[in-house]
Length: 536
Image (tube, rainbow, N blue to C red; front, top):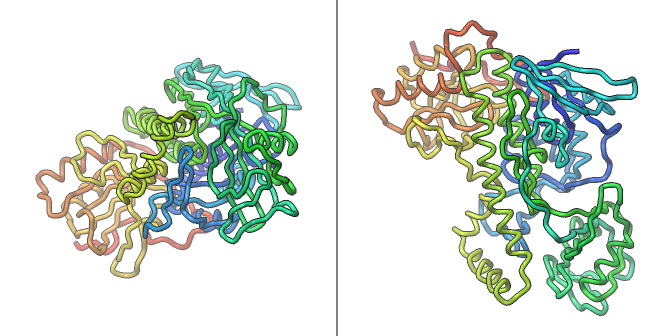
């Protein structure tokens, strides 16, 4: 058996990678050791920049339809304080509540419609590689077998066998606190006040959010009017394995220890116990083996892992597809390591800060939290931290491509007038092809871009209050090059030619053009075989 790409692990990161590869015309072999999709949610939703990427792929509407709350109020925990973005007209961080099993089912259904299926109960137990290929030793009920591929991507979680077999170190630490979390219905006899406070006999009136005691931290919030999300954090020397599931009684005992009172719990919808870790692989690539998601990084705070892992997948997929198709420019695949390792380090920065805010119990730690809360009263500080948590402050380094503020950032979803109809950047990004947008009708720039027309979709469009005269957008929706408004051609022409060659290879390479697949659930898109409204 042979494949172009093997994906090990069918969690959200592996499934997102499979979707992106299929859209780019590469059918991966997707192997998952579990017999069936997990029913116990490890996460309750998605948040941050991945929502914008799903919008750009035309998948956000399906996500919202499957969500338990597609538009929850933008209020998020940060250590033991909260980022309350509700009064901002355009919050930099948004979320959608969807249990992880439902998210995985949605992504799996989408990838099946694109022609690939998850092969379950097939466990990768060993890998080896040489200059030309990577081999995976796989174990299943029918017996062991070997599969060869051009590349293999480990999306197999914190205890990644792929990472171990590739000899990639995973430095960091495990936090000493044990976190317990329950999603439960409101128990009979428990009083809820109109503002959401709980009346707990022996502990008094508790408000949503975090309550710190001498024994730990108690937190709760409302998922619906009848369903609570309750957490406790305690310092413990005990280590727990995945084979020791948490019980409702265990969490009730923990609540009693932390707040010194009994809190009756209703029907459990989710029970989980975890210890946060602070780790990042020293590299995300070893030859033909790559890592993404929890196999590459673990963060000491909740609510960011899915966002980071699925963004890894979007960044990696188009570069991997270009390598498979044989026309990637030198070093393209190495930019995955450069860009996403830096993004992981940025996420570690703010999650480590959250850990520092959460762990201290002395007067100095209380003073730190109070000062931080004061800073969050300023809109600029609140917006900056919200952007940091969302992952949308990332600017990929693009040396030699000018100094436009948009270069390296995620493309804004501009409304675009083609002269015949109105479209958006999001609609044009659905096939996951590179875009060249001429926003100022500059034929000299289009003539350069047209040499790559078999790989890059070219549009001549207009937009209100244009941010640039032209934009070159990568398949992952990040801007590779931008022409400042009114800039002279003498500077722009060599910059644009260099950018096109850097990201999309030689225009004369004898290769198969990008496919133009019909994306699932997408409306008809403007044709781009030639520039729209192209004056001759």
